[in-house]
Image 1 (cartoon, rainbow, N blue to C red):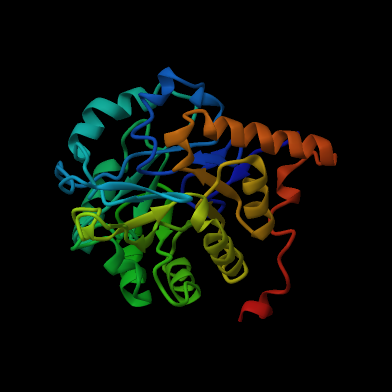
Image 2 (cartoon, rainbow, N blue to C red):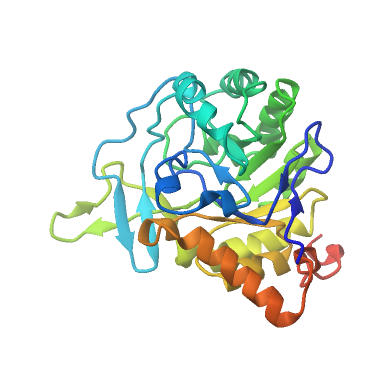
Length: 313
């Protein structure tokens, strides 16, 4: 059974995964803690905690809230900063078989360029995930991802600063994601990740105020899957680069649905908070489905449910 996936077929460097199951940024830390609990070397790739130029403390508490079918978060990109990541984390990644992808976020195009340049020749870093879609910040993040021209500009500039494969994480908080996806692909992105969290809110009826300190946060988990599935379907039918699906994956069947919609890989995120073994469960469910269906190459599923591209114009 062939599970391997090439996520950057036109990149200066390859990004071939042993299988299409990845972790999602912000839900797996940098993988070191989970490596003590599960065999992460079986996964296709891990994606780091979002990384910025300088360390960040993140948003004040309360910054997470459980919902009926998922969770809201407004973490605010708490992280150790890129220099500490390079010093303390990447040497561990370099000893792993599973590729490690660094999710990066800046307040300006210059920040993204500097981050990409600093990580370019670091052993243990397989690719970059450009976060232009985080809804939990007042500056940076999503403001780049809602405008096709700004998104293309930051992608083009970052591409000039690195030889690493560049994954661009899109926001679902737009009326139509297709123009942004096309602009980012035309600017040189190797892969698109669809999508980040959906802006939402929880209210504390007793206190008469929002649950989250910041008021709003990003919704993730099973509740968002039908929305992200539709977006993956649209984006995969509109661009000629691989698509990674990220949104509500908890089972092998969830992963298969995303592959049928046109994704080449999936990220498992919120499910790991409830079940640290969730990424492996998804992988094993995918393998079981392929065996039961007599499919010997996972690529046979990718885009199998796609109509003619003209349908999404």
